[in-house]
Image (cartoon, rainbow, N blue to C red; front, side, top):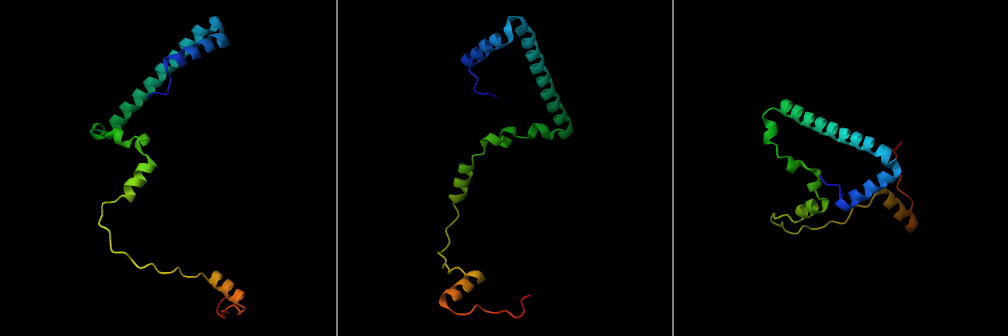
Length: 122
């Protein structure tokens, strides 16, 4: 996994660390960073072992690259959904939209007619 860190960026980070921490404290913090990296690696390996134990033989059959969320491009998914190879149905007749009750009342008021009255409404 790369975070976009090139060798030049790492050198710049190292130079900034030397100036901020000083040459006296830098070895201590470098060893702390190495210890943290090792403990993270041990935790990741432990999680992998535990997952393998809990899933059993199915763990090796899982295609983990297929489950990687970075591969999902919403634009590609939509494009594939829209460019469906299914046969195109005959064109359907588009019905005019049904006018809502509010729009009907507004139209009647504009025309100068009284709004309809519903005696069963509460």
